[in-house]
Length: 124
Image 1 (cartoon, rainbow, N blue to C red):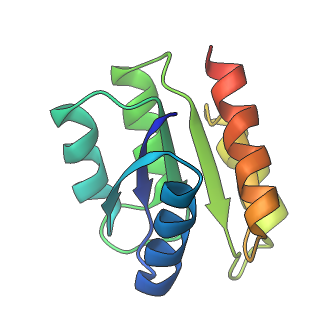
Image 2 (cartoon, one colour):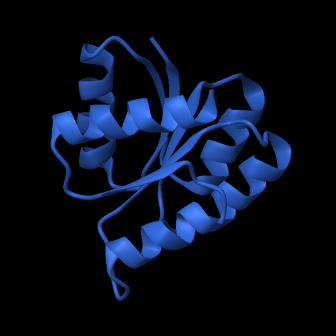
Protein backbone atom coordinates (compact mmCIF):
# COMPACT_ATOMS: atom_id res chain seq x y z
CA UNK A 1 0.00 0.00 0.00
CA UNK A 2 0.94 3.68 -0.12
CA UNK A 3 3.14 5.84 2.11
CA UNK A 4 0.94 8.84 2.87
CA UNK A 5 1.68 12.20 4.49
CA UNK A 6 -1.48 13.61 6.08
CA UNK A 7 -1.46 17.35 6.91
CA UNK A 8 -4.43 18.67 8.89
CA UNK A 9 -4.60 21.16 11.75
CA UNK A 10 -7.77 19.61 13.20
CA UNK A 11 -6.45 16.97 15.61
CA UNK A 12 -9.56 14.77 15.68
CA UNK A 13 -9.87 14.78 11.91
CA UNK A 14 -6.15 14.05 11.52
CA UNK A 15 -6.16 11.16 14.00
CA UNK A 16 -9.34 9.54 12.66
CA UNK A 17 -8.29 9.89 9.03
CA UNK A 18 -4.84 8.44 9.78
CA UNK A 19 -6.35 5.51 11.67
CA UNK A 20 -8.77 4.77 8.83
CA UNK A 21 -5.98 4.87 6.24
CA UNK A 22 -3.80 2.61 8.40
CA UNK A 23 -6.65 0.10 8.77
CA UNK A 24 -6.84 0.07 4.97
CA UNK A 25 -3.15 -0.93 4.90
CA UNK A 26 -1.45 2.41 4.22
CA UNK A 27 1.54 3.78 6.12
CA UNK A 28 0.69 7.24 7.44
CA UNK A 29 2.82 10.07 8.79
CA UNK A 30 0.96 13.11 10.11
CA UNK A 31 1.64 16.82 10.40
CA UNK A 32 -0.45 19.49 12.08
CA UNK A 33 0.30 22.37 9.70
CA UNK A 34 1.85 23.19 6.35
CA UNK A 35 5.25 24.08 7.79
CA UNK A 36 5.56 20.75 9.59
CA UNK A 37 4.13 18.89 6.59
CA UNK A 38 6.55 20.51 4.16
CA UNK A 39 9.49 19.57 6.40
CA UNK A 40 8.31 15.96 6.62
CA UNK A 41 7.81 15.79 2.86
CA UNK A 42 11.43 16.80 2.36
CA UNK A 43 12.72 14.28 4.94
CA UNK A 44 11.38 11.17 3.21
CA UNK A 45 9.61 9.94 0.11
CA UNK A 46 5.82 9.65 0.08
CA UNK A 47 3.49 8.16 -2.51
CA UNK A 48 0.78 10.71 -1.68
CA UNK A 49 0.24 13.87 0.35
CA UNK A 50 -3.21 14.67 1.74
CA UNK A 51 -3.46 18.28 2.85
CA UNK A 52 -6.17 20.40 4.36
CA UNK A 53 -6.54 23.83 2.74
CA UNK A 54 -7.45 26.14 5.62
CA UNK A 55 -4.72 25.91 8.27
CA UNK A 56 -2.77 28.34 10.45
CA UNK A 57 0.91 29.11 9.90
CA UNK A 58 1.13 27.73 6.35
CA UNK A 59 -2.10 26.98 4.56
CA UNK A 60 -2.70 24.25 2.01
CA UNK A 61 -2.43 26.35 -1.16
CA UNK A 62 1.10 27.40 -0.28
CA UNK A 63 1.97 23.84 0.75
CA UNK A 64 0.68 22.47 -2.57
CA UNK A 65 2.60 25.11 -4.54
CA UNK A 66 5.87 24.39 -2.70
CA UNK A 67 5.54 20.60 -2.93
CA UNK A 68 4.69 20.68 -6.66
CA UNK A 69 7.71 22.90 -7.31
CA UNK A 70 10.05 20.58 -5.39
CA UNK A 71 8.44 17.23 -6.27
CA UNK A 72 6.39 17.74 -9.45
CA UNK A 73 5.31 14.10 -9.75
CA UNK A 74 4.02 13.81 -6.17
CA UNK A 75 0.25 13.30 -6.10
CA UNK A 76 -1.62 15.55 -3.69
CA UNK A 77 -5.17 15.13 -2.41
CA UNK A 78 -6.62 18.42 -1.14
CA UNK A 79 -9.29 18.23 1.57
CA UNK A 80 -11.43 21.04 2.94
CA UNK A 81 -14.48 21.70 5.02
CA UNK A 82 -14.72 25.22 3.66
CA UNK A 83 -14.95 28.41 5.60
CA UNK A 84 -15.84 31.80 4.24
CA UNK A 85 -15.47 30.27 0.78
CA UNK A 86 -17.33 27.04 -0.03
CA UNK A 87 -15.17 23.91 0.06
CA UNK A 88 -15.96 23.07 -3.60
CA UNK A 89 -14.48 26.40 -4.69
CA UNK A 90 -11.41 25.90 -2.50
CA UNK A 91 -10.87 22.41 -3.89
CA UNK A 92 -11.21 23.61 -7.49
CA UNK A 93 -8.56 26.25 -6.75
CA UNK A 94 -6.32 23.59 -5.18
CA UNK A 95 -6.61 21.38 -8.27
CA UNK A 96 -5.79 24.36 -10.51
CA UNK A 97 -2.65 24.87 -8.38
CA UNK A 98 -1.48 21.29 -8.86
CA UNK A 99 -3.44 19.03 -6.51
CA UNK A 100 -4.37 15.74 -8.18
CA UNK A 101 -7.86 15.64 -6.66
CA UNK A 102 -10.03 17.20 -3.98
CA UNK A 103 -12.38 15.89 -1.30
CA UNK A 104 -14.90 17.86 0.79
CA UNK A 105 -15.09 17.36 4.55
CA UNK A 106 -16.79 15.64 6.19
CA UNK A 107 -16.20 12.54 4.09
CA UNK A 108 -16.94 8.86 4.48
CA UNK A 109 -14.25 6.22 4.65
CA UNK A 110 -15.38 4.91 1.28
CA UNK A 111 -15.11 8.38 -0.29
CA UNK A 112 -11.65 8.85 1.27
CA UNK A 113 -10.32 5.58 -0.10
CA UNK A 114 -11.77 6.33 -3.55
CA UNK A 115 -10.15 9.79 -3.56
CA UNK A 116 -6.82 8.35 -2.38
CA UNK A 117 -6.89 5.78 -5.18
CA UNK A 118 -7.82 8.45 -7.74
CA UNK A 119 -4.95 10.69 -6.63
CA UNK A 120 -2.49 7.77 -6.68
CA UNK A 121 -3.67 6.74 -10.17
CA UNK A 122 -3.28 10.30 -11.46
CA UNK A 123 0.22 10.49 -10.01
CA UNK A 124 1.33 7.19 -11.55
